[in-house]
Amino acid sequence: MTNDQTFTLRPDGGYDIQPAGVLLLLAREISTTPPTALRSKLEGHVRAFLKAARAGGFKQTDVLEMLLARGDTSKRVLTMCHEACDAAGNHRIKVVMDIKVVMDSMRPDGG
Image (cartoon, rainbow, N blue to C red; front, side):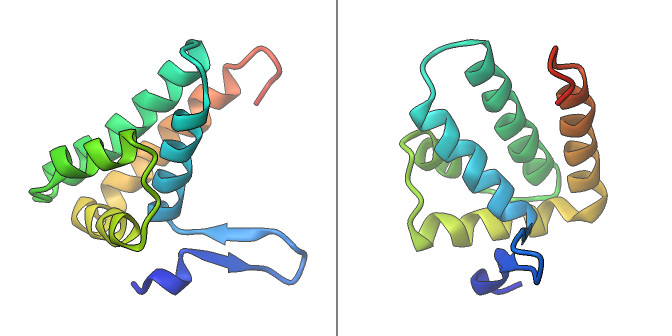
């Protein structure tokens, strides 16, 4: 997976976003969200991604977590996000993404 495929513009104007892009967007949102229930939920999603990466053998979860917590969206961090998601594998990422869908559906506004 190359980094230029992280966010792909679709003909309808929307984007297809690779899991690494989702991880990066979640972390960026955390860095701009005050301490609230929403921020805690976002942090939980990032932890789920990192847990899946660790289970898949990614050895730099602590470093990536620190960089994401700082709001770092550099090319280096994006590359690490791709490596983490690649290590996690599609089966683990699917579980993480399904949990997000379920949790969003539980929001009072229906997600």
